[in-house]
Length: 310
Image (cartoon, rainbow, N blue to C red; front, top):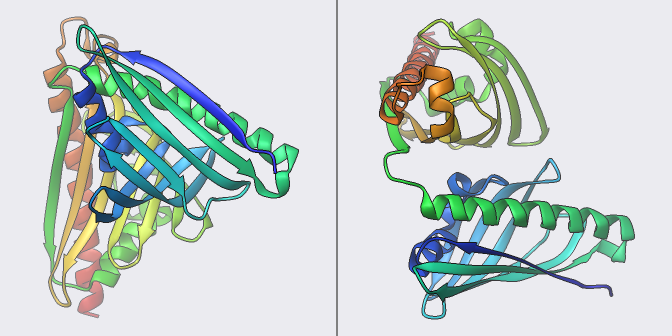
């Protein structure tokens, strides 16, 4: 069997403990790493961790479970995919962090992998995916570790619905119907090749009258949860992840919309003018996102309550 070993490296102008915290906290990965769409811890026993990841690989959405061993003392995190997604037959590797003088950190990201049936085309696909994603992740890790404070937003809007979880979820899940149901949505193109994994392209209106196009990948759980990450963003945003979550029931549901956003400071002057600040951009973004989220949540509330009342 043909096994490949690769290594990618970067030196980051940040202390090793800061960098390690980002690598170790998989919940931050969708925000920090462009290829990662969603990631969450499934299990933690001591330093042994089981996680699930959804990520883009060569433009395709792939999902897998991995086992990780966290070693904060040596600042290392090793990983092994449990059931890899084809064409990967096996995948493992390690994050290795080495402190340098001047609060700098040298990071090495290694991968060891095989292709299904040692297929040359599959191996070439993995080579390209590993190289592209590793390069992107290390650059993003450097940005996340050195980003100045004040560029991040994390906020949630909620409404109470006197209806069923199923009806509220159906409204949020059926984004293809939003142009007829929501005044701020002009166009939607939705595909779902894998059940529960949607690609959503949408033209959205803002309170100032402008329209922008976004593209997102959404991961849907019928029990009442949809998470998403925008892969094509409005001009002011560097990162935008979010979640629709439904709690409570059976007769009263709390429907919430969470946004985690990073402002792109380089875009602020071009979009808002040369004297605009990042804080002004953050306020504008929060107002626009909250307005659209609450419009969607209130429409979902009306839909569910109408269905309850027959």
